[in-house]
Length: 312
Image (tube, rainbow, N blue to C red; front, side, top):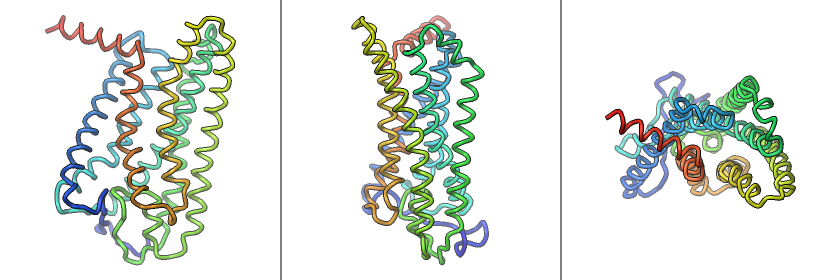
């Protein structure tokens, strides 16, 4: 960042979640609880997908990727947030801020694309059930997952590098609990109209294109479901897709609000809440959504529990 900390010793002040210091202990306890649940839930899904033969399918391959992503996504911001809430030191190092910026954007964009791959998987499962395993081959699944991770990294390199070229004129107080693009744009002392345009353009692309793919997949799914004569078949197809739809709504709803609104005109308190939602709440509820509504995962948990009791 130009004009701010010409060496790696430069530090930035994260203003945090709230302007009321008396609430910091409450925030610390709640966020720590959410973080522990996030670790437990996502690690459980990853573990089950690896050790249970019945979950070695394309659906759970993508779900395992989503859980790995959520673990890294929340870990890129929550430990620093807890550290700042625990004591009087609210700073983050220059290197820490830059790393957080690149990683947070990388994983956020990757999730956008990974959700498209998961929608395509569900579309093939409902529309072409007899050819599902041949279409969703291990090679195709790996290709879709790799494309998601690499595409997300490309988005991060573009936006983060462009943001780091802004002049900050010695200003170091980031009005947020993490280093992300909208907060850093507000910190700049020069003309940020081009940065806001790039931010809106890239985010619109990473929102409109994936959402278009997801909507297309679900239109095909809806058409296939309506053709089913069996009410039981329609119910099963609906349950197969509902969990993914809920995750899509939660993630895209918060991301659109946080990144597509003009950086300087949106309410900062609302922006902090939205950032907190998609960096803490969404990674926590994703495994709960898939676990509570998924008979295969619950069955795998029961089998794992029986093995544990049998081996004790």
